[in-house]
Image (cartoon, rainbow over all chains, first blue to last red; front, side, top):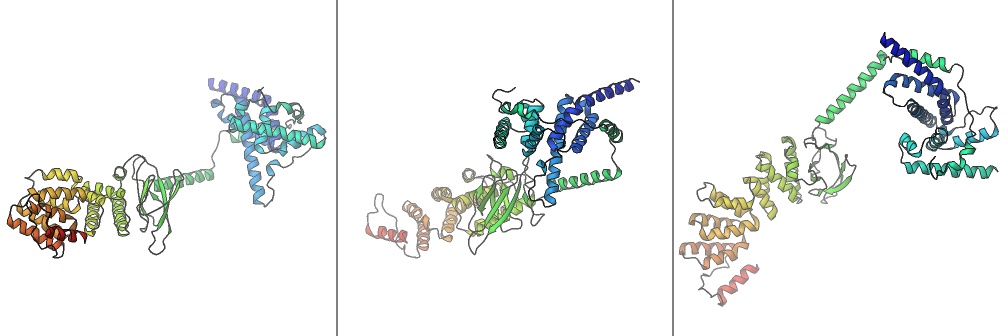
Length: 169
Length: 343
């Protein structure tokens, strides 16, 4: 009986967590992989994994963010490998243009095009820093990179955006 | 916010990213997946896959752990017998042109370091002993540790292979002191194959002083100085044998010792030492013999010395050299002596 109550309690918490986090995680995944269905799938997979091991997870939000990024990275890697296997000369599958819904505004299109023009690593840095509000040391830890490298990526991203803006204006 | 954050400059502009919302069926699909996948079930097929992979891994690890040099004709040479040293080496013969020494390329899988060296070379943690054997023989030492210590835990087969490798290296005229020291150490520990190798090396002649010392070390389990100490015990039954061995294999130190013995030992032993000098045509002992003959009080002994000196100089030393104390300025013997030694 007690177990039943505990399970019920944890299930309620899980449902609340899904409702609170799904939108944030979905946007993170979508900005990362550029494919809405793949993003939804990645987020669902992260939730399923979380559900299995929630007892051993300290911070659900951080864990889910890391899990989604990891799933997305694997997806991009798989795409790149498939593209190479199919003989695509420019193996840019990981930065392939996503679908661009017609309802997007011009600024939104501009930002998304820019995000997908970045390398996988640069894209993760910008997503974690600007949209997830991680500090540089947290990003470095999450991506298993030296903090200096993360800051270098940030500088490159900034230069690239400014260069792009100059070109379009 | 981080001070000096380069992304601050573009934060506002990039905040225009479009926002997507989850589809209506998102949560239903999630619950469905949870129902299907939890608790995690392993299908029989998946189970056999996992079991198969685990079995392969176990077999590979077991093979790796029990593999010994010599079991595989082309595989890497592994020093699995060395305690606590998980080292793996690949040895490949690079080239061999006529009489030019062959070179071996050794790769230490642990550090990834590759070294090119010839027979007898000692580099970092290993000494190339014989690269003509199959597989090539290399023996190892841990940094800061003598080769003998590291090799002490090798198997009999490995020690045999190393000993044979050293003999082959000696034939090629390239054998390092490190190799000999190791061989001697093994002989002193009663390794028959190492003793045999040493005896064979002794019989070849022309060894260096280092070789001689090493040979003594191996044969008697003690270095030359210790052997000399043994001879102080006049009751030792093998004393004479040891003195002869010191002369034969003891290098400069051994010769100096023998010079002393020639004055003080019993006549039979002196005679045997003299015979040994003549037998080996050891002309370098001529000054010693002359010195002894100058102070010889016994005519029979003096005659033996004269005969020995004649034999060593091919009959050119024919004059009695028993000179008075302080003498020796006379022309005859001195002139002859110079002639003889200049040959």
